[in-house]
Length: 165
Image (cartoon, rainbow, N blue to C red; front, top):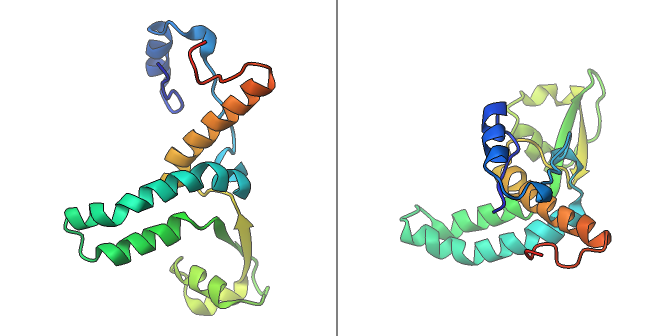
C-alpha cells in the first residue's frame, strides 16, 4: 500500500519502514526545491485535468453547503487554480521599473504601500509553485512526483509500474 512519507519525523518514518512488506518498492522524489521546479507544462498535464474534474462538481457542492455565492466562488477558485503564473517582486531600491495593470494588482495583494512600488522589480514566473499554495504543493506536487516516478520507471523498461507486478 503506497504511503506518503515525506515530512515524517525519524520515529514516524522508522515505524512506516519497519511495518512495510514493500521495502523493495520505495521511492521518494520530492527533493530540494521541488516546488520551485514544477514547470508549467507538467502542471498543465498533471494538475489541469484533475482540476477540471474537481471544478465540474464545485458549484453544486458549494450550493449544497450553503456558500454565500456559489457561482462567484467557483469562478474565483477556477481562476486561481487554473493560472500557472506567479509574480515575484524583488526589492531593489530606486529601480523604477515599468508596471502593467496585472503587476499592479498582484503587488497590492502583498499589502506594501503603493508609493514603495518604485523600489520593486516585478518578475513573472511561469509554472513554479510557491510554498503555501495547498492545491499546487500538497496535492499537485504529490501527483507530479507520482507521475514523474511512473515515467522514470517506464523509461527503465518496466511497463505499467502502477500495477502490482
